[in-house]
Image 1 (cartoon, rainbow over the protein chains, first blue to last red):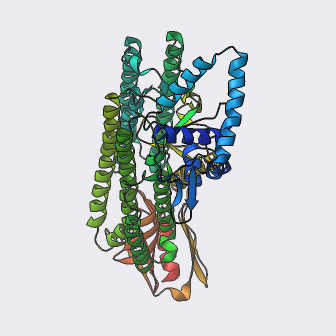
Image 2: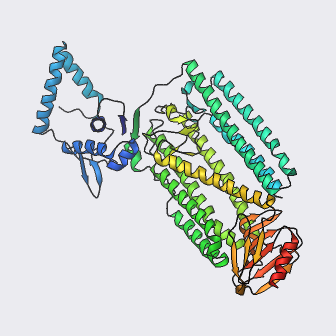
Image 3: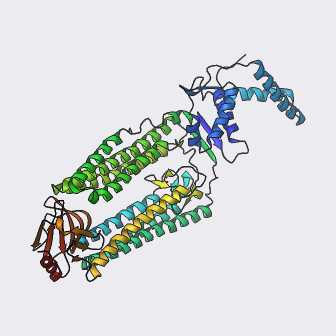
Length: 128
Length: 451
């Protein structure tokens, strides 16, 4: 996948790496089980501090997107579960976004349409 | 002979400088004359007119400096010929570089006037798959073992034939240069992947080709360096070896230039078939054709002309390395010119004295010899220096031979003003010493004192 980070953005670099990898996974640019560059290697390529990359990777590992071991390095996890913890987190974030949309006068059907469009933009298999 | 070498060398430098300085006027990616312009504007009439004017000026400069070197033929003194050549060389490099900088400014002004300013891109793009296999076409580092062995064999041969005291400066310089090739190889292996077309298969092709070409150059370069002490050592036994080596070296230099330009053309041809999606505007980091970016951790970066690696002078290590290299080159030039000036214009620059204990031989540009008299096994007066004298290091011109040589396959230290009609040879168990002062009477006086 093409990983893009912008040093001039207000979003922290580790967060950009984190978000880009999740977006890449959803869009099919990254496949389950695919190997990713090591922390040092990616830091060299992006000309950023190693700790920045490590922070982004650690966050992704904690959320279950990445796994790593000494033999095989850092890889994308083989499968992903929408477990209770994730669903709770998703609900919290959605609640906040929906609240902001409601304040600005976006109606529920319009919001649902937007979510569907975004979901479909990632392509691939549609979940029921 | 030396004068002719300087004239030909000056001609070669002038033509090479003109050709290499012309290269930035041919667009590489969307950079022309160190200025990033939109791809669609690369063939704009104003750009074509400016680059045409630039090429014409460089051609005139090459002609001017080639003619400027001709008076060297009529200079009698080696030191003055060298001094003239060095001053001309300095002026040539300065004027060519100044012309390039002037036209870079002109191109920048044109860019501003035409409103071609591209947005500053702060985004970095990398291909995670390409990163993992970016060095798959890199020539293996194991090849350096071969050149290392060659270098080691050359060191052993030089040590055996010439002695450590004679050969260590050359060996040290070659060893450091060999390490520099290894360092540049690792720089090439470490260069970040470039996403230029946003089409993974073409980015991979560009990446593989770039790394393979450059790593091949580094490996080949290390072999030519590694073989040099062996060639020098063998030359002392068989004179023709050095000519064969020089011929191969010239062949390698021609091939290197051809290969790098081929690589540059290949990249441009491939990029020309696709929209350049992510070539960023780095003009602010390239000042006067030098890279100055303190936020970039890399010490060496590929230049924007596509045929070189540039030092990042924005880093403290870059400043130090650039400064040390410049000092070394200047020191070498000043040292050699100073020695030749002293030889030419100092009345008794080559001199000797003898006491009951020792003989002292002195000349500019080489170490003074304190030779104990009991070590001298033979003293002989010759009409001239044997024709088989091969220089190992030191000064060897039409008028002087000073430093370490190999004469009749024996190590020899020379303090000789040529063509004086008389040369004194002092033989010891380890090596011979040849002495000829500018005044033949002084050489004969030393002979009488020792005989």
